[in-house]
Image (cartoon, rainbow, N blue to C red):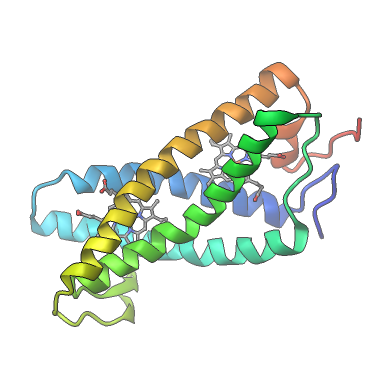
Length: 183
Ligand code: HEM
Ligand code: HEM
């Protein structure tokens, strides 16, 4: 079933919450592992981080295809000016971020000569050879991208809370899969 103005499909709802919650956990997980001293435990945690990151990447690709078919949702209440621009920008940054984070992670891993896989299933073999420039590009993209992503997730969350508490327009109910009245 496709999205309609009154009700989102279960695929839209499931992908939003699966990826959304996954991304929030991954951002916190990434910031946590970044500060750990080099150790075998850190290596294991990075392996888990990479595996979940690649799973989210696959879901994100399905979501982008689904978004392309359905287009972005039309807001339930009349928002104008900077709020509309910010809400649209946030949706774009969030969607692009779900691809850019895994891609930059992969670039960083290739740069370090490390393998990339999903829980033991190898997707890209490790060469053991470092490519310092590639590693640096990936690291900067992943680090700065991660900070920007956190900022936009917070903005998006504040927007969702505003819709719920101030506008009371059913935006959250719609993203929870419920049917909302047109006006
Ligand atoms: C707990 C946190 C979150 C809440 C409460 C929340 C809430 C919502 C709500 C209510 C909408 C519907 C907006 C509308 O109908 O105009 C929405 C859409 C959206 N959210 Fe979130 N969200 C959260 C986390 C995230 C995260 C972490 C991402 C990052 C990937 C994200 C990405 C999106 C995108 C791209 C849309 C546009 C519709 C879509 O593509 O499914 N959200 N969110
Ligand atoms: C869902 C997507 C992902 C998110 C949201 C995410 C987020 C993060 C964040 C916020 C950091 C901390 C970076 C910093 O503070 O500089 C981090 C670290 C890291 N991420 Fe990701 N990541 C994702 C996917 C991946 C993938 C797919 C890979 C590799 C295939 C990867 C590899 C790494 C590595 C190796 C580190 C540690 C860097 C270090 O210790 O210097 N990430 N991640």
